[in-house]
Length: 302
Length: 325
Image (cartoon, rainbow over all chains, first blue to last red; front, top):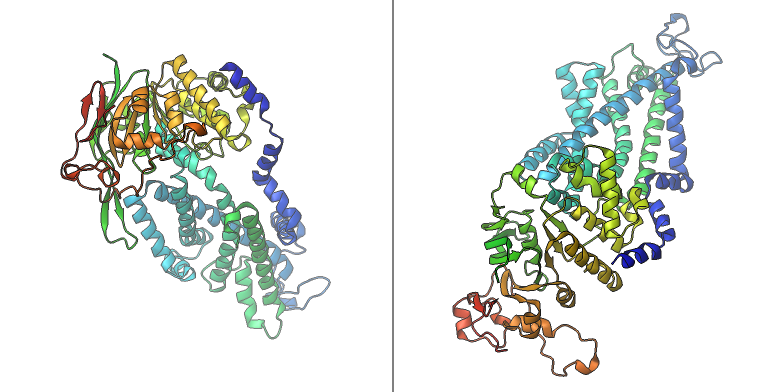
């Protein structure tokens, strides 16, 4: 027998297989996406640029975003104020740069929180099934049944407007979507034989969920993460515009659009500039998310 | 014949309830109905039968992956049915399983070391990482995979090698019983024989007991000491391999064995009898003997009473008209 096993290991060649293996690697896929999908690659670069600008806002901003200068109110674009000034004489460009912090923060933190909650609940729901599944999924249905913005507004009104409460509201409206995706993946994965193998070894359910199911859900979670961020950013902008999100004098893009709308006909740049900023950040995240989905999750490709 | 009984299965029944497409009507499928047999220590008992006869369900019942509707599985004196989860976890060390599909049975996101050491870590066999890794390497060599491949992932291996990894994982805890659920049916013929030899050699080395589930009768003849033939959730016949192949008692066994393709054209019979008809629905099995709808020997009594398992010189068969040898 030992002869037999030796020959096996010698005969088998790996060249072709390791190439296939490389195709399966997530980093290889992303590299491939950057090469073939220019829109996604540029979006990725833009996002990195926006993140750098947000982190080093004081360096990039030409003026103090909170400095009120009533003598130079609602000025048009000039060399000193590239995007003009708002109704209190604050520099619009500086406020947009500082506002990117709010948008990115609100885009990332509640998305991350909602995805952690959604993933855990989705795993439990999909893996155990039965009554637990029923309860969690009906809860998700309740959340999904309401228009998400309306639900967020109700939560913000009851809790009061603050950044922390904004996080809570956005987490509550977003977890259900993730939970559904993870649940469906967990349900198909748990039928696989390697899960049965783990059970037959005696591996505990919690270990099976986090060591076997979760790593196999990860590619979809990465995609879901990038596609959920623009939604959260938009929700923040919407809520701030409606006055239940970020509170003045904080520099938030939604709030700036709200302030600028009064001067839409006299000095449109005050409202348009933050609006375009929202447009750019949402689009770049969407393009990146689409690109990632096509690259990582070939099954979801249309 | 006073052999040491390792597993005793008594009147095991497993029903699955099935809802139809509208989700309104519930019907019960008897995947395994009233099955009793014994597995002796150190032997290979093969379970054969056509697709959907309940072989794999029986295998999974044996290792308690699914709970039976009724009946008992006694492993080495302990009844697995209704065992507390902690006690069951302890007993899992002694019962392992090798799966059919080597592509689905290994987690694609774990490397070889993680896969093989999972049982060791789960049962906290070794204290240090080093000991763990040494044991993994030892197991890899036992099953014929170079120890340098310890950090590779399953997709970097061929089907045969993956099956070897699966076998290494099953061996890790020094089990007594291994349920082999069609371990070679997904492999190339040349690889099949290598894996079969490996399984056979490991049995001698570690004094293993196998329940070998298969539908490939030539594989079964090669590897098993005794054969158990199943039809539609019931056992038709149990006996020593040679007896079963040379002098089948149950008509179904006879048809199964005649259906095996013969390599020599001269040995092929022109008028080979081939079993006709479909396997009856397990939702609504025929009355009396379950095989009667397809059996050429069936008489009135077959539809009226279910044949009991009877002893014929150390062999067991369930048929009213046992074939004369």
